[in-house]
Image 1 (spheres, helix red, strand yellow):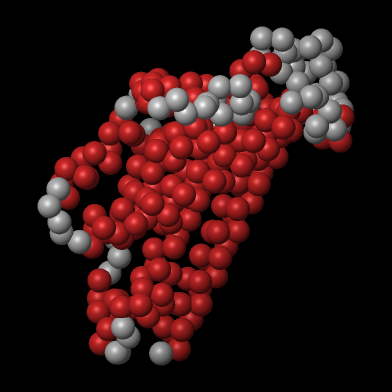
Image 2: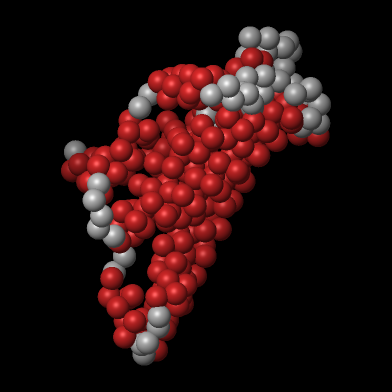
Amino acid sequence: MRWLRKNLIPIIGILVLIYLFVPIAVVAVLSFNKPEGKFNIAWNEFSLNAWQNLCGVPGVCGSFVTSLEIGLLATLVGTIFGTMIAFALVRYRFRGRSTTNLLIFLPMATPEVVLGSSLLALFLNLAFPLGFWTVVIAHIMFIISFVVVAVKARLQGMDPRLEEAARDLYADARATFRYVTFPLVLPGILGAALLGFSLSFDDYIISAFNAGTLVTFPIYIWGAAQRGIPVQVNALATLVFFIALVMVLVSQFINYRRRRALEAGMSVD
């Protein structure tokens, strides 16, 4: 009992991680499967056919590339606007600041069904044709709030004495931002961008309302589920997961090297 009380929290943490990663592991394993029928839900035979022919099924790669384009464009615009809003909310005092802080959280708290249907009504009233650009606009509106929250947290956790030290060393506002503020905020901006891209790439509800005849990757999967999801979908999903995993590991390694270099410099001083 003493050992259990001492290690209870690590055990719970490990069980939660297993719970989170078991579905991903199932998707990865089934990407090497050769299903007996049209439904890839049970292991039948090992095969590399899906990995060798990622675009072997019509529509898979087209919808995947469409989701990539929408995600990258929405992430770029949303990250720029969200970062500027976060700087304005943290660094400046203006009338309506508290109200703006409250309004920023509304898209995060609003159900996606409500947000998607509201945007659909807006586009129809404006006679704006549904398609690629309506989905991009909808995703930008959706992810800006998440970017603002992530960058705000980074800005609020910064030590203001670092910028004050730069100004004491005769650095002007532009140089202070370029060499001190921006490098310190950059990890938060990159994290917000990754979060925004993931939210955009796997969104189905808002996209389904505003896509018109456009087929994104989640919409393709939903449509294919009725007649059997091809194994290529599992392969592409596994590929995206491992790319994201590599990016996280590289980021952690770079941060580790920076900490070691900083500790070595402090020990020399």
